Amino acid sequence: MRNFIHNIKKIELDIVLSLPGLFEKTWQSLGFLNFSKCVKRNGYDFVEKVIDFFSYYVKNLIYTLQEAGATNFLIADDCGYKNRTFISDKTWRRLFFDAYKEIVEIIHNKNQKIIIHSDGYITKMIQTFIDLGFDAIQSLEPKSGVDIFNLFKKFKNNICFIGNLDISDLTFHTPQQIKSYIEKIISEAKKSNAPLIISPTQQILAHIKPENIRMMIESTKNG
Image: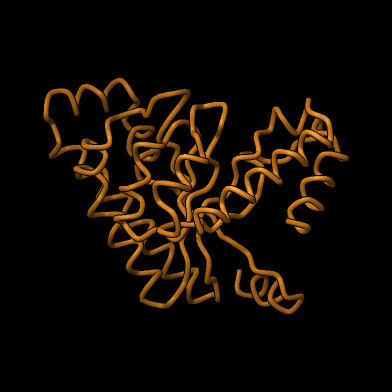
């Protein structure tokens, strides 16, 4: 890993290393049904022990990666699906806030950056991510109900927004439609002084039109 990071830096590329998310790992290890039963019955003690286990793992992983030269991190932790979050923001804060606060501080103590990634509808969680000190949030799926234009107006420059270009649009829309949307989103971000990085909401797959990816890049550069 140390050699890999060193070689990447030699060609002047900044890499962002992905870390496992505490919410995902907690419910996946228990099964969502069991996780939900624990939460519903106020069985927080057991869930918190599981969170502590994964938090310890993630923190030590960060220390190891920092020693190898890593400086930018992304927590991959899907918290929502279409038009809803998996659990309420209140419950999420109770269970995961303190553990994530420690993780963010470990990275910020070295003046490094950390991004939170979540698919789905996470509009109601943006303030929590800001309170935790995340530098950016990635995905922001419009098809799941995330209205990035309202987020610009509400949160302005409190967090950097990354993504919002839906994979289905890159697959089925025309290059001109992609260009028009990018011009609109850049214009609205500037009006609110909101930091913005244009990117697809998900991975670029083989079925996506190459001409739309080209237009995404060119329109972003020109914006």
